[in-house]
Image 1 (cartoon, rainbow, N blue to C red):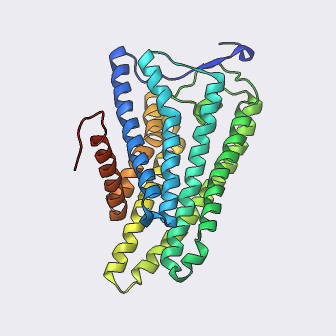
Image 2 (tube, rainbow, N blue to C red; image 1 turned 90 degrees about the vertical axis):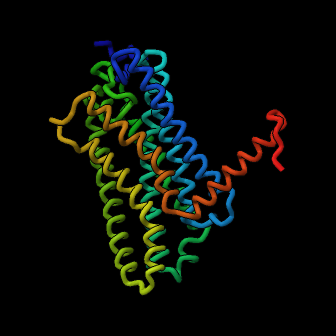
Image 3 (cartoon, helix red, strand yellow; image 1 turned 30 degrees about the vertical axis):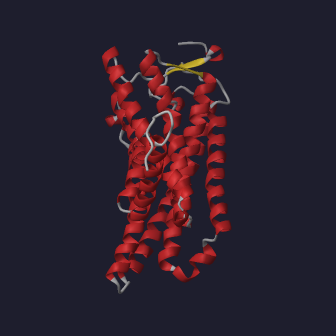
Length: 321
């Protein structure tokens, strides 16, 4: 066991034991990463460029796509580099930075998902007041609050966990610097402070979860009272993607941190971490574009424009009339 005062790096959990499997995991993660970059990049560009999507719902969707890009870019590049170069090391500062950003993006995303449920509630249950309650200033303030919450939350946790050098070695049994694994090697003082923060965080998380549930109960009751079948269908189509994203995010996160200790093993913890840190950011663009014709049309327009500009580029020697 290394001396805690001399620790300058951590050792992460390798994705595989053999070189062939490491390279296979590298290509698999690279494919997922590129798909997430493409999907979230297209959503962001479509919302930013299409005037029809300059509404509160799509403004928050743009913020969600940016958070997903940041979230998956915090964990996968380092994991891919370690798999490609057959190494496990991450620097002390790099581990602290990775923990800070993963906590920042997760907490900001959950805050944003809570705000998005309020947006759907106002749009469906209080449509006459929607323009007043969800004007541009209110939307910008709520989005800034979500990002600010993420910064404050991650600062508190990172400062608590890295205020003292780890006392129980430098081996992190995960492919990125995860809270639960860093806690296992922390000194008792850092551990006790972090437990208090985690209890406080769980209370806030549960409060947001209850708010989302109560909001959607009221939304569904309002939708069922609508006389028009077309109106009900439109309301459900705008709520279903958000509800699916919330369910995916919470179910994977809850399973990761609330599963019984008997079901815990390095390989199981690795799969669960991939499930909650990689799958939601990669799938969210697909979820939001599948049942939303406006997003589909905007993304198709962006892709057509990009292809047209590429084909008309002089280096290709092709000019589309």
